[in-house]
Picture 1 (cartoon, rainbow, N blue to C red):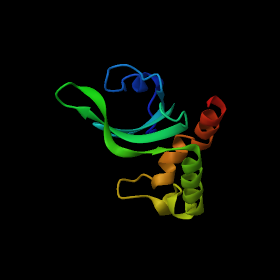
Picture 2 (cartoon, rainbow, N blue to C red; picture 1 turned 30 degrees about the horizontal axis):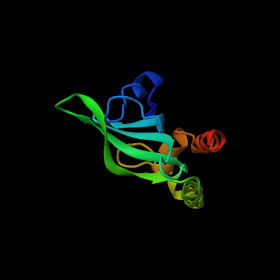
Picture 3 (cartoon, helix red, strand yellow; picture 1 turned 120 degrees about the horizontal axis):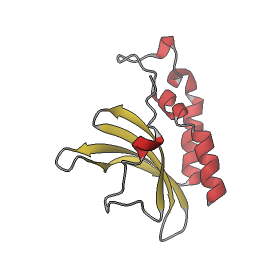
Picture 4 (cartoon, helix red, strand yellow; picture 1 turned 180 degrees about the horizontal axis):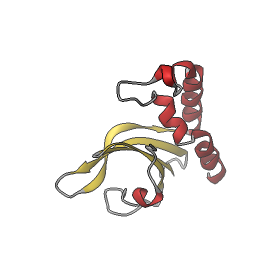
Length: 130
């Protein structure tokens, strides 16, 4: 069972003004449950021009039936992203998906979700486009 969102599903995620921001683009996502998803986007800070990756929880608004971003997330510069990636790699023995590392729900730990989104390819994309 893949937790990764399809391109069609990702089209449902729009920033609060109802359209994709000029400075931020959704590039991938993982479904957490029926009303929550973890969305990866990339963009540039409008003041500094520094590129960033944003990994954020989005929820389904029950009133509007639209996906909305929450304050729960991380916005990282390329240097911060690399530091986080290195930190996760240093602890991959705990985080890797495997029979010995399955959580109560039967899925692997955090790095399994992150590997599914292919963060190395994402970082390369951000560095090449900015």
